[in-house]
Image (tube, rainbow, N blue to C red):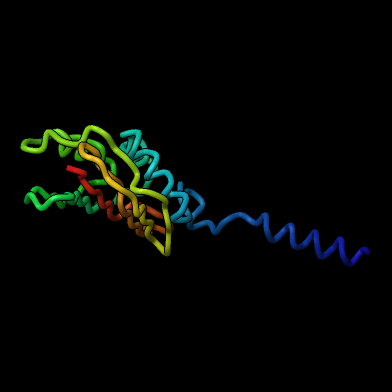
Length: 151
């Protein structure tokens, strides 16, 4: 019985060990948690709040369109400026565009990326399709965000 308690105590100790010091100040360590928060902040139009918690990094922003109208947008944006850039894209002529934001179905993460979908789309909605992450100083940060404009 003493042997069993000792094994359980040692097992509990190893589970409760803190994460490595290099990543101690990180807001995110796993893609699934960051993916959920990107989705939540995207819908709430508060990506700037999330960006302040991530390591400074340029993010590739891509907005595709459900119809081939030549209005696709690809841009490099500072992680803290994502919300401002999206807001500008949402109201830019000739789109006068997608006032609603949606998540394109269920999230599935693999490695350093998360995909959302498949799901039907509606007019006047901007959908989160795919996010990719990068490691910066041992911490996860947003590297790419792909959106679909439901036109």
